[in-house]
Length: 491
Image 1 (tube, rainbow, N blue to C red):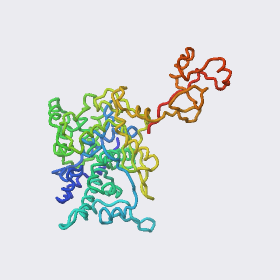
Image 2 (image 1 turned 180 degrees about the vertical axis):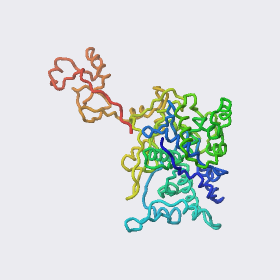
Image 3 (image 1 turned 120 degrees about the horizontal axis):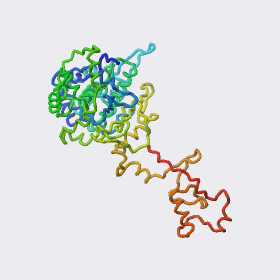
Image 4 (image 1 turned 135 degrees about the horizontal axis):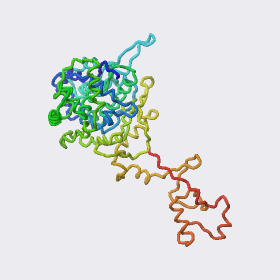
């Protein structure tokens, strides 16, 4: 069993920076406003539980193996637990001149300077402590344009502390370009970016690159408690719960938004971060010996229909989308069809032809300015995210009205492969003896052959002796050699 020495989820950082009332007023109605008063007390992670859950992670498919079942951390879990939007623009774009963007959008340049080969260079990130020291106190007489710099600094601080925290206690300045206008804050899928970042951190830890687990690990812990209530009872010190205790725990689960705040208030663990292997192994043993009845497949049914605020209403449906999660240089597959039970489905089928490649992708940052939305395969993956609404998984093989597959078939000419070459199929099918036609549809050919004897169908094969004398042997049509039609390629 692999160990977790520490977690780098800096969920306590918002408690160190109480934003000015004017900053809070501008953030009202956005997904970042909740972090100002997320916790009313100090909350620490239960590191042994996080280590046990992380050891159940499968980096190849991105699911968690809880006993004989597979459980998937989906976008539905993210929007309910964290309150971050999961349906919006992809968190990607240009990583370019950080000095200009920092001075223009923050009013100051706080880029980290490092000595590389005797030369002083500036990195494309700033320290979280620098943001707090320079922007926590807002001057009294300040116009709205300069006040917006303090708002951006606080949001950047939240991104580096909670949404996408790393081991270095810094935050990349490339996020600043997405924070130009206040009305754009809710237009980006920060929850999808958070989940992509967490998958990347889990993969790095699993492969032995580090013993410190970064990312939004608190959401990972509460996700496990929502699915396996025995873990929550274990955290409360009840190691062998009775049925009555388990039912009482289920009845008293939090119902306030976001669930992170509710679970933190309910559990209120003052953990001393005891990293002894015994507790982690006990929790890991619980997860490995689970029975299907021990897992709550649809825990959010207890919540009211209006649980999510207005700017997040209906976004839980993105949990059903087979798509790509993007966070600049990172791309992770979101595959809910691997765990259909979570969505009340006995089986699942998806309407696409992307194959079964669930690998996590990560490009190296730095160097020349890069537009990650157009970089190599990132352009294709961004299209997949933009088409997320078309690829919601459905129950079994039941066709879905208005599916993307049907739309592509109607709107585009189908392409087929013949003798290793791609050729375009004509919209109207003719026999090979006619002009400007190369392919024959199987169905129409059969009808044409049947109609040739009666002479009732126009454009069918002429079997008269005159036609046979005009046609060469190469032009004669052989009904036994038909070209198979392939499925349309979706991008």
